[in-house]
Image 1 (spheres, rainbow, N blue to C red):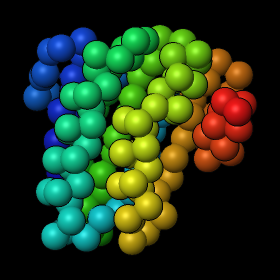
Image 2: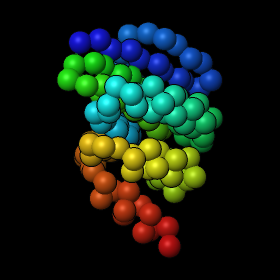
Image 3: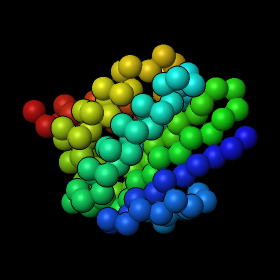
Length: 132
């Protein structure tokens, strides 16, 4: 199995081994993609990651891939507070991520690590309904 991590933290890009960031607020998206789709998806995620790194409260983001039985793509965003993450979930940038996920052949695993516990897609629905 091989892995490649591209991490962006507050305007700095580092090509390195996996890095653990100490934060209580994180969004993780993982899914399997066909070999032919891995490059365009990771390029789109790198672009998305670049756009969010200047967002208020963004502590960092990473894109990684691994090859085992297909290509596994992992996208992680770290946020300073849950309020910062909630604001992001209402943004145009987040809708770009949803568009990538909607095109997935296999359903992705989406996880929100929050101070109160771990949540799934229900968290997005809750946040977007509270906007109205």
